Length: 64
Image 1: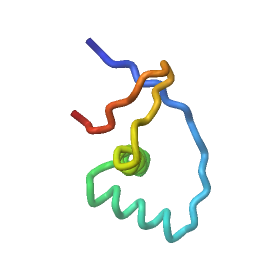
Image 2 (image 1 turned 90 degrees about the horizontal axis):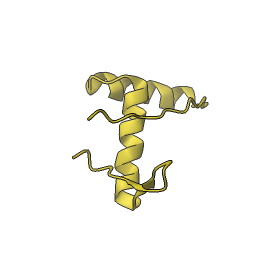
Image 3 (image 1 turned 135 degrees about the vertical axis):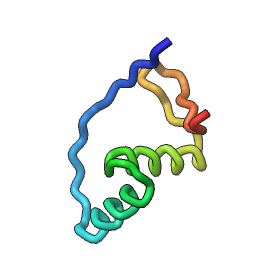
C-alpha cells in the first residue's frame, strides 16, 4: 500500500553561512537541501519526542 505524504511549501530565510553549510551537508549525504533539512528536523524531533501527524496520530520518526 502506498503511503501518501502531504507536503506544505514553506519559505524560510537562512543566513548565507548556514545555507552554505546545509548545502555542503546535503551534498555529502547525497540529498537535496530539502531532504537534508527534513532529515535533520526529523532526527531532532525524535530526540525530543513524537511529531504529530495531520490526522492527529503520531509520526514514527525512527525511519523504520
